[in-house]
Image (tube, rainbow, N blue to C red; front, top):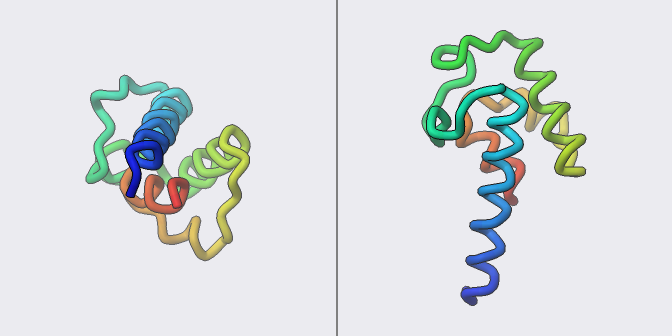
Length: 83
């Protein structure tokens, strides 16, 4: 892997975390890959769907319903949006 692609991945990850922090109105230091959306952030199913929709709109990358249904953690969001 080249340093350019590594730098690009880091930039994309930082952008996702910034957008996620903005959507949730939480400081970025509270979000980690292992942060659970339901248990730690107290989001319900509708909140998660709205979060995914907001990220899709900002990032112009759209998940399938099956992918969106698998999201339980911030790490899951990173997995699907950073592929």
